[in-house]
Length: 367
Image (cartoon, rainbow, N blue to C red; front, side):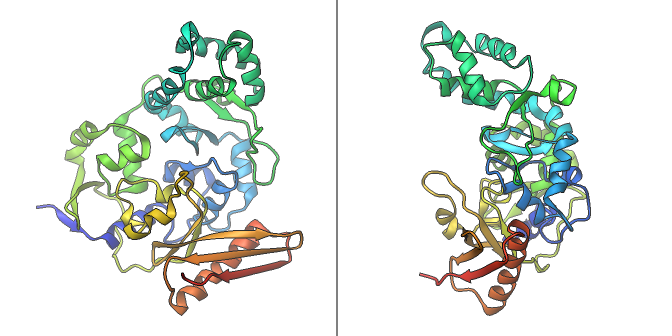
């Protein structure tokens, strides 16, 4: 009979792998590979996400890794922009390609006549990007020369989904402004993505970063159908049962800390991958609070962890010479939580707003 893992046991196992029980002493590239991928459509998210996970991290550490092309920002799992290592992008891009093509197909259905041919769209787009990096405004403009009747936004989306593109880093402090350029992966990284990706390796890496987990969790994380892969890997995996009776799997030697291991206060950025990586997110987000964490327009606000679980959201208000960070708890917090979260919030402001002398942390009253 499979061992039963409590919700706290799942929580601590996931936090350990996400480097959120203790900040790691390692490089940006190594950390990003250990995390598999960090959601990165919000400009500041990867910086704060790594600051939460790495000892002594500075914004320049990430900018340097981007400039050295050790890590890249690219459209990846869930057809969403992520930060991942260049090696992983080259190794696994073909694995996520079918889900990206399916997302693009929804757009091409609205394109009339022969212009909906994805092969023709890709061929033209490769020609457009053959001369070097371009921003999407220029890409859409040049694509419309060949497809004058097609909505430019649909063209841009099809290009983004169908071609292996990476975003060219900029000099902006938090990087990745909306106008940043993209380049073909093979030209930017010096080699083409692998023609075939190992689904088995991807499952192993997912479990190393987010496990214990099951096929439904990986399908939620990556839009990948991998139940058969879990079956093939069964001889090398450990099987567990959750409190709710769900079967989950894990690498035999993966960390599974004592459920009572202390978990430090942490302030996560918007869309942090930690809160989006599982079908059943109760290991991180108590079920009763999930509607307050994912808005109707699918925004995922910045949140904070207390005792390892999401206990509220946070936001900042900036003026010219002052910045205020407001913690909004879901329920009344104990005094110790207020002290530790306020101290961590002050450290966040020292990282994100180092040039502003007047910094304040406020805990909003509970409704």
